[in-house]
Amino acid sequence: MSVKKHIVTVTMNPAIDLACMVPDFTAGKVNRVTQYQTDAAGKGVNIAVLLRKFDLPVIVTGFLGLENAGIFEKLFTEKGLVDEFVRVPGETRIGIKVLDPGTELTTDINFPGLSPDGDQVEELINKVGQLAECASIVVVAGSLPSGVSPDVVGRLVAVIKNKGAKAVVDTSGPALVSAIKAVPWLVKPNDDELSELVDRPLEDHRDILDEMRNMNRSGIANVAVSLGARGALFTDGEEELLAKPPKIEPVSTVGAGDAMIGGLVAGVALGLSLKERVRLATSLSAATVAHAGPSLERLDVAKDLEEQVIFEAISL
Image (tube, rainbow, N blue to C red; front, side, top):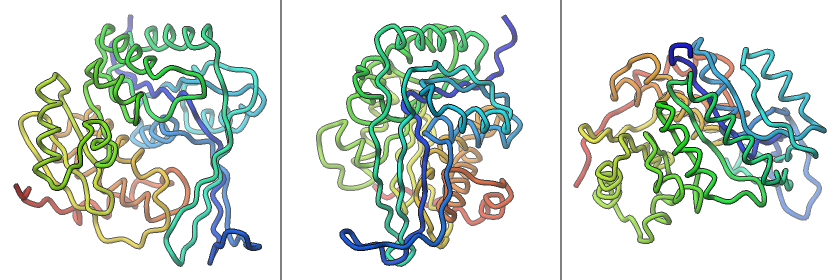
């Protein structure tokens, strides 16, 4: 096999995102769209697109609907992504995101997606195992298609680890529970998802860090917990950081979490320290919030924000 260097992203439930700017959006009324854009998206796809901006070699896989795969295939070709998606009969789901610049709120309207059968799920697990043999990092990100058991995420983590690659997981609910049991290398829940995972309210940094440390002790090397506009907490089992994002004019939170994962993964691939990875991830996330669409067009937008990322002492 070749030297382990590729990064693989797994997106089991990708989406075609239609983002619409609608001033004064009101349910039950006629609303006028002032701007819109359509993007091939999904958490793993967004992360892959960002990683390519660092000239990192990236392979993408997951499930794609045969009937509307074209928009994804065009993106993969344009961005230099190696396409290893499993094709499934039907259409990849559509997600409509209505952005109101006045209230800074986003309304999501999600269409139903694909329902891969058992054979297709096994094909994907086998494919991820094969790809992991020449990968340094494999990212499993996003929700699950209808009918796919959350246990699949744990199985993927186990396969990735067995091949010697680092398993990174960004998901929620039962899928996150499945991932945690399989002990990935990095997980990134937000504070609400972590609270749901541990089945108790998390009132402050002390509560959140206690649970992050528990994950470290269980064997999960890296934990990141997003706090939304309040920043994020990070630990690698030795160092603990609280990073606050730069003050920006928010446009949409779509893709912010994906940018954070992308920054952390890129930082690992580039050999950065934890603090450098966190600074990169936080600036990328903030830059993504400052524009519409799931991914940044240029890295220099985030680069300009890096020095504005603030590291604060963690109050315990």
